[in-house]
Image 1: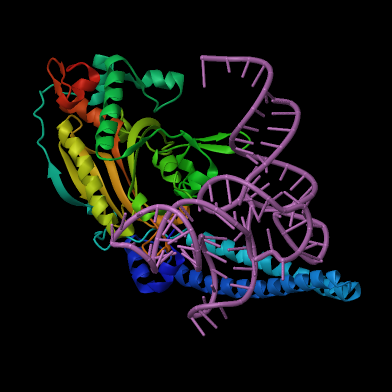
Image 2 (image 1 turned 120 degrees about the vertical axis):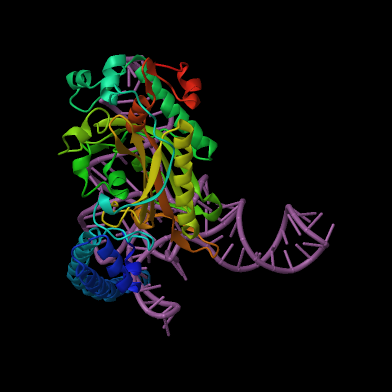
Amino acid sequence: MIPIHKIKQNQEAVIEALTKKHFKDISLIDTLIEKDEARKNVQKKLDDVLFEVNSISKEVGNLFKQGKAEEAEVLKNKSSELKSTTENLSQSLKSIENEIHDIHIQFPNIPHESVPKGKTAEDNTTVRSWGTRPILAKNAVPHWDLASKYDLFDLDLGSKLTGAGFPVFKGKGAKLQRALAQFFLDENTAAGYQEIIPPLMVNEASAYATGQLPDKEGQMYIINEERPFYMIPTAEVPVTNIYRDKVLSLQDLPVKLTAFSQCFRREAGSYGKDVRGLNRVHQFDKVEIVQLVNPENSYQILEEMTAHVEGILQKLGLEYRVLLLCGGDMSFASAKTYDLEVYSAAQEKWLEVSSVSNFEDFQTNRLKARYKDEEGKTKLCHSLNGSALALPRIYAAILENYQTEDGIKIPDVLVPYTGFNKI
RNA sequence: GGAGGAAUGCCAGAGCGGUUUAAUGGAGCAGUCUUGAAAACUGUCGUAGGUAACACUACCGGGGGUUCGAAUCCCUCUUCCUCCGCCA
C-alpha cells in the first residue's frame, strides 16, 4: 500500500503516476483523503471522551481512598453515562477505518519516473541483450519432445499422480534440475545472500502482508483445515515475511536473502501452446533473491540485482534480453521491474525466466518492515526481489539450445553439479 | 493425542483491580572524566494515532467480556516450555 501521507503530500504526482499504471478510478484519491479527515475527526472526539472517562476513574479512586463513597458514586454514574458515547464513537471509527482500508488497498504502487508509458507487453523497452543464438540442426525439437526422447520429465505421469501441470522429473532429468538449484544457490550465497529454507505453506497474515491476499487468492492453492494455509506461489512470501513487524537498525541493511523452494500456482484460465511442456506448470522450482534496503539506494540495488541475475545467465551461456516493463505491464505492487527473458531456440521465442522488482515502500508498508535512520526515526525499508532463477524455463532453454545430433550438452558450469556433461 | 506451566518494552525481569503516565537491571545512544579505552557518574532510551508544538488516546501474545477504572479478574484462540503417548 502506498503510505497515506505520501498520497496527501503529492496528490498531483500520484494521480499522474497512477494514470501511467492505468488505474481506472482516480476520484478514489479524493474520497480517500476525505475519509481520512473524517477519521481524524472521529478519533479526536473519541479520544476526548476517553480522556474524560480516565480522569473520572482516577478521581473515583482518590475519593474511595478518602472514604468519600457518596461522591464517588455520583462520578461513577456520570462515567457510566459516557459509555454509550464511547461505544458509538469507536464503532464509527472502526467502520470508517475499514472503508479507508478498502479504498486504500485498491491503489497500485506508483511507478518510478523512469518507467515508460504503455499498456501491454508490446510497450516494454528492451534495455540490453546479450549472447548469440545457437545454430540448431534441422531436426531440432522443443524441450517437451527432448524430454520424451531422453526420458527427462513426464507430464502425463504427473497427471496420473496429481493432475495437469505437475511434472515428474526422472533420472538425469531430475539430476539436472537439482544441479541448477544448487548452482543458483551457490551463485547467490557467493554474492552475499543468506540462504533460507522456508515453509511451503503460509498463514493468512503472511499471504496478506506480501499482497497475495485479498485479491489474488485465486492464484494460490489453499489447504483448509481449521485455519487456512496457503501453498506459496513464490518463496518471496515466506522470506519477505521474516521481516514482518521488525524494526532494523541501519547497519542491518541491506538484508540479502535467497531461498530455493517449490512454488505452487493455480494459473486458472491459462491454456494453449504457451503452456506446453515446462512453459507454465502448477508446481515448479525457483530460487528467489530478496533484499530489504535503505530507501536511499534501492534503485542502485535494483540494478545490482539485475546484473547479478544476468551474470548467472551469462555463465550458463544463454542468450537473453533485459526488458524494462511499461506502466501497464508491471505488477500491482512494483515501482520498477526488469524482466529477463532467454531465447528458446527450438520454440523460437523468448521465455521469461526472471523478474526483478523494486517495490519501494509499498510492500514494507503492509509488512511494517522498518529501520531506524541516523536520527533514530523509524522509517519503512524498501523491498526488492527477483528470481535467480526460475527453473522450468531455464531448464527448457538449456535442453533446446544445447541439443545436438547425439545428445544434449550440459553447460560447463553445471558439470560439477550434475556429474555428467551430456545427456 | 493427554496432563500441567507460561507469554510484559531491544534483552532480562517486577507488577496480579486505583500516584503504573509499566518498577529495576543490562544493552544501545549522548555527555562528564581520560592521551585513548575501561570503570564510575549524568542524561536519554518502545510503537502508532494526534498537535504548529504541547495536551491527549491506544497498545503488556491475538480477539471478546466484567468494571467508574484491567498488564492484573473471566471467556476464547494462538504460540512456547515441561512431562506422558505416538512417530521419520
